[in-house]
Amino acid sequence: MAKNPERRVMLTDAAVDVLADEGARGLTFRAVDARAGVPVGTASNYFSSRDDLLMQTGARISSRMTPDPAQVEQIMRPAPSRELVAELMHWLIRRMTDDRTGYLAMLELRLEATRRPDLRTQLTRTVRAGFEESLSFHRDRGLPGDPDAFLVLYLAMTGVLLEHFTLPEMLGDDGLDHLVEAVVTRIIPADQGPARIRPARRARQSPATAETTCVRTITLKAWVPQTSARRTPLRKEDPPFPPRPCRSPRRTVRRTPSPPSPKTASGIQGC
Image (cartoon, rainbow, N blue to C red; front, side):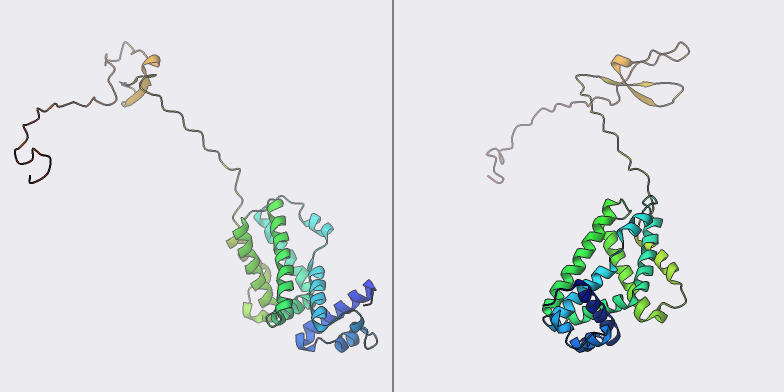
C-alpha cells in the first residue's frame, strides 16, 4: 500500500465529500479518485477494500471534528459556570456548521454501520472514546453537572444538530441560539456556592457524668436545660424556684401476684 500521508489525507477528505453528497452507496474508489482529481486507481493503492475506505473515512471525520487545543484553552479562560457550558455548546454548533460536510458524512457512516458489523464496532469504539474524553474534560475542568447531566446534554445536543442539519424548518422560528440556551438551562444546574459542612453531633452525656436539671426563669418563660455543675444562681428579684428534674421519675407500682389458677398452673393453656 502507498505511504504518502498527504495524499492519504487528500483522498479521505474527498471520500468525506462523496459520502456527504451521494451517501454510502456512492462511495467508490472511482468516485473518490474523481473528487480528488487524481488518476483512476489511486484510491485503490491507499485502501485495501471498500470497508477499509469507510473506516479510514470515519477516522478522518473524527479528526476533523476535534477542536484545536489552543482554541480550547482560549474559550476556557472564564471560571466554570453554566454560562460557560452554554458558550461551549454554541461553539460546538459553530464548529459543526463550518464543517457541515463532515457532520453529514458521519450521519451516513452511522446508517451504513447498521448494515456492516465491522464498521459498527469500529465506529462505536471511536464515538465512545470521544464521549469519554469529553466527559473527562467536563469533570476535570470543574464544569457544573454530574455524569448523568452530561450524558443528557450530549443526547440533547445530538438531536439539535441532527434537526439543524437535516430538517432545519422543523425547529420553527425559534432561533438556534435560543434553543441551545434552553437546553443548557434545563439540564445543567445553576451555580452553587461551596458545599456546607454539617457540624458534628455533640456526644450525649451520660447521667453519671452530668446531672441534667431544668431551671425555670421569669425572663425566658421556659424550661432551660442546664447541668448541675454550671447551674446559674437565681437573682434576688426572681422567686426562689428550686431546681426540678426535666422528667418526673416513673412510679413503680408493685403488685402482689395472685395465686395461679388451677386451670393454668401447669403453664399450658387448658391443662
